[in-house]
Image 1 (tube, rainbow, N blue to C red):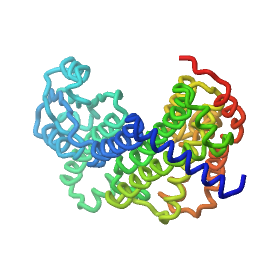
Image 2 (spheres, helix red, strand yellow):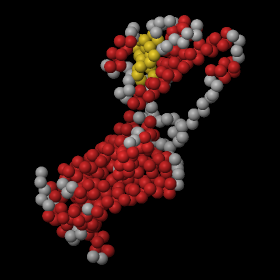
Image 3 (spheres, helix red, strand yellow):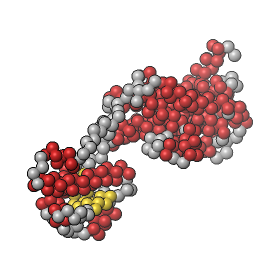
Image 4 (spheres, rainbow, N blue to C red):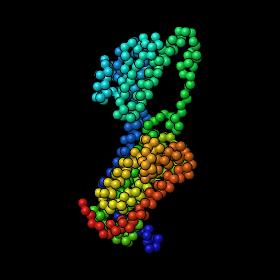
Length: 392
């Protein structure tokens, strides 16, 4: 066929697909409503950047002015809020188990006298590791309070001996730490998580909708009509069918990027063209994998199951919650088989840190290969469209 005839058939198939999208509300919900809800949900849930005022308990058996000062300092931390005092460790432990508090500080009787007489008394803190974020943040606060307690006693003792404030500061903190978190000085969890969780969920929708839209051609016995409109060319059929979906998903992807980097002001060092290219490759690679999954298993149910599994595993293997380099060697190698992994690497290298695009050449190339995956299964899909009978 001539180029003009091919384009005409593609547009005819695309118009047919627009009618299908309009008549079936599941497409509107999964391509527009749910993605927008996901964007608003995650960015709103973490709009403060970090969890604030997490409930903490105290078991203060010493009950002196020194220990009460420590408790007030703990309560003054941004992420901790002392909500209860308990009479024993058993009561505090039960409160953690009932999810009333996330941690508690235990100060045994005689702590102040022990510090003043340099006998190194022990104070303990306990925190729940059920929630990784709250556990890590409260561990930091409780450890800081423990350090401040010994420092306060040391400061008072040295001042009584006539040391100057400068000498005391040098002795208590010989090395001063000047901390500068790169690109995210606020340590904003919204910046770390929303930039990957949202694209990952968008890719999940793209995987499923791609496989679903092709599989329903068989389910509703429209496959022969599709091939007839496409002139028997499976390439024309799939390009025309996926074109409206691509435009809708690209619109949602770019709108989400504008919302994060433009409206919310998430930090980024990459130029706008790299950001747009990253979004384009993310959408097309997810569609490519969806088509490939259906080609491997030309069944609506099985192809959507494969896409669901691959999308869920993507969150683990992408590396934004746990570094791939710290995973088992085989798992680290398998991580390269997930489009979200390469999307994350391009974002991390070229968008977040602003390195030139050629630094991430491998990841750009990998997403390109995902886009080309359907070429391996075109014959299988064509045979399915013409010969297969849908089996529920």
